[in-house]
Image (cartoon, rainbow, N blue to C red; front, side):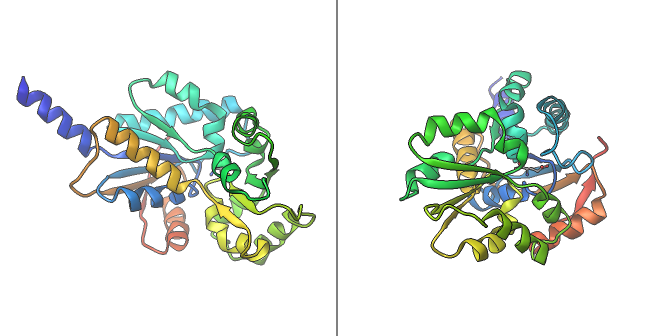
Length: 272
Ligand code: DGL
C-alpha cells in the first residue's frame, strides 16, 4: 500500500502542465511558466482550427474549450492553464464545474495590479472585443479598480496579425496608433488583456512611449501555477519536456512560433 501511494504521487508530479489557447498567444504565458518553473513538463494545445475566439459567443467557446481540456486530461496533465483571456472570461467557472478533480488556472487582465500601480488612477485595457465587452471584465473593474478611470478597448485584427507573424508590419503600427489617437493624457498604464499582445510589446511601446507602464499577465499566472502545484505537493524537480500541439497546420504554426519565440518550436497535429 505504502509503495503504491508513493508511486502515485511521483507520477502526478511528473505529469505535464496543460496549456490552452486559440493559437500562439498562450506561448507568452508558456514562456513565463517555463522561466519560473523550469523543471515542469508542459503540453501546449493551440486551437488554430477554431481561432480566433474573440468573435465567438460564450457558448461556442466554452463547449470547444471543454473538448480541449478533455484532450489534455486524457494525456494525464496535472493542471490546466487557460492561457487565453477570452476563453477564461467566457467560462472559467463552467470549466471548473465540468472538471472538478483537476486545478484550472485562468488568465485575466491584470486590472488589480494596474489599479494598485497607476499613479494617475487612469489606465487602458487592450483585449479582444469579446473580453472588452464581457461581464467578467466589468466585474473585475468594479471590484478592483473602484475610483479609477478605466478604458476597455476591444482591438480587432491584432490577434490575426500575430498569428501570421506580422508583429513588425507597418499595419500593426497603424492599428496601434489609431487605438491611441485620442488618448486621455492621464493614462499612465496599459494592460495587455490578450495573451497575443505581449508579442506586440515593442510596437505598443513605440507608440505609447517610455513613460507609460505596459503590463501583461505572464508573471502573475506563472506564480499562481507555482502556488497551486506547491499546495498540492505536485511541483516537479527533475526537468521538463515540452510538447506543442495544434488543431491547425503544424508546419505553418511551427514556422510562425519559431519566429515569435526566437527558438525552434515543433508543433504536432492534434486531430480535434
Ligand atoms: N489569446 C486570446 C486572449 O487572450 C485571444 C485570441 C483569440 O481571439 O482567439 O484573449
